[in-house]
Length: 168
Image (cartoon, rainbow, N blue to C red; front, side, top):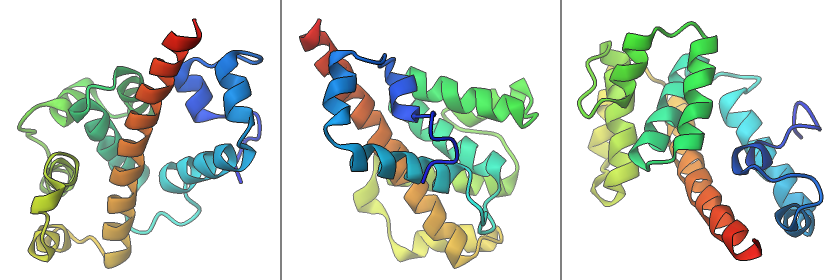
């Protein structure tokens, strides 16, 4: 499923080395590893971008990481955005409490904030702001999946960090 079978994003972000207690624990569920990496690939490097390009996807993932105070995850998405030639001022705005960015990115980040910080407040009417910026229904679904996945990564990394402390 992964584009590169030697790459495991979670192992990399969590600093899990080969043969470590956490590596052995994760090896007990090879399908979970495969599906997690497949989700990472599908949401951040899809074959069909569904009207949501790489810069926007990485910006959303960075925003989720920042809102959840996940520095390792934030560093990953900052680096990806830098590789996509996003300037430092824009990076800072993506991370700012009230981003001053182009209207489409502003709508994406506002929806990311809503789904990340106040998911119970999300209503169908909130989708109109995304449609007004030209997002298709497929792109809106991809956005929601990406926010959910990045939020899951934050929790998974926190859990693995706690387990690593117990294994030490």
